[in-house]
Image 1 (tube, helix red, strand yellow):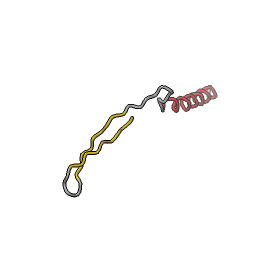
Image 2 (cartoon, rainbow, N blue to C red; image 1 turned 90 degrees about the horizontal axis):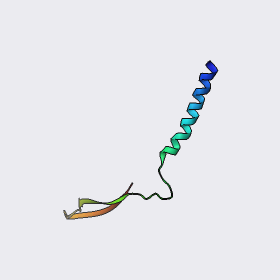
Image 3 (cartoon, rainbow, N blue to C red; image 1 turned 135 degrees about the vertical axis):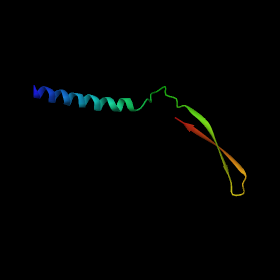
Image 4 (cartoon, helix red, strand yellow; image 1 turned 120 degrees about the vertical axis):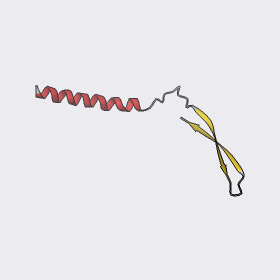
Length: 58
């Protein structure tokens, strides 16, 4: 009975260790990242408004 529990535990750990990396990324051949333009407003040394447009992708 004890050997059965040990072998079942080892099998479970092996299955989980192989399943975790496959769940990590969702990249495939048809993968397109979702991007949007983010506007960041800041001020320069003289107090003028500077607006930067930054592209952010997920």
